[in-house]
Length: 273
Ligand code: DGL
Image 1 (cartoon, rainbow, N blue to C red):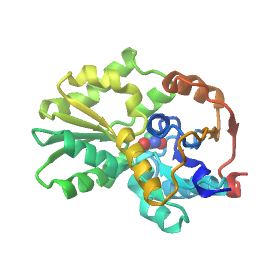
Image 2 (spheres, rainbow, N blue to C red):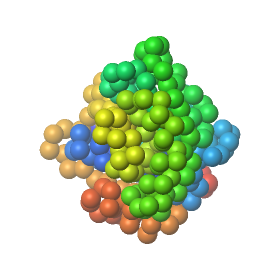
Image 3 (tube, protein in one colour):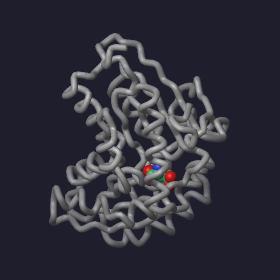
Image 4 (cartoon, rainbow, N blue to C red):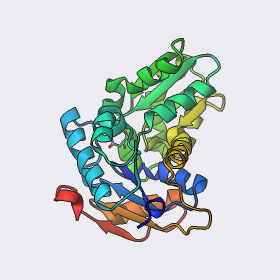
C-alpha cells in the first residue's frame, strides 16, 4: 500500500481520544483513521508508571500491526508518562498531546496565570508545567488532579447535577487564583467543556489540545511526505477492548457520526490480532 494512503493510528485509554479524532476529521478530512480505546482498562490516570507504560506499548503495537503511517497518542496520561520511549521504539512518527496543549495555553493567556487539570498521573508528572515553562518561564501554573471527571465522562454524565457539583468542588480553588486560562490536560475533559465553562465563568479560556494536536498531525504528515491527496476518501475504524455499546452511545453523541465499524480486541494478545 502506498504510504500516504495508510491510516493514522489514534490511541487513548478510552473514549476521550475521540476529541482528537474529531479535530483530525475536521482539519484533515481526507485522512483515514484507526482508533483504539482501551475501554477494558480505563482509567490509566490512577495507575503506576510501569502499568501505564506496559498498556501504552500494547496500544502502540496494536496500531503498528494495522500498518498505520503515524501514531497519535491522544491520551495525556500516556503522553506524560512514556512518550519518548514509545517514539524511540516506533518505526513511524509518534505525536503526543502535551506540547500542542502547552503551546496553545501560552498563546492564549494574558495574565500569565494558567490552571492545568488532568489525571493524577499527568499532574504528578509535571509534564505540562515543564512544557509551558519551557516556552514562557514567567507563567504561573496552578495544577489540580480531577480523577472523578473521567468516570463521569465514561458514564455520559456531562452536564447533570453530579458533573456540576464535582466540577465546582475541583475548580473553585483554581478560579480563586485568578487564572485566565485553564488547560484541559485530559482527553476526556473537553466533553465536559460546557460544565467547566459554567463553573469558571465566560472570561476564562478553556484550552483543549485537540485542535493544536490535529494541526501538528498535518504538519508531521506534510514534512514526512505522508499526507493524503485531496479527494481521497477516508475510512474510519474503531477498536475497543470492552463494552462497545457504551462507547458507541457516548461516542456518537460527541462525534455526531456513526461509530461503525467497531471491533472488540484483546490488547494483551501480541499485536492485538
Ligand atoms: N485518557 C486519559 C488522559 O487523557 C484519561 C483517562 C484515563 O485516566 O485513562 O489522561
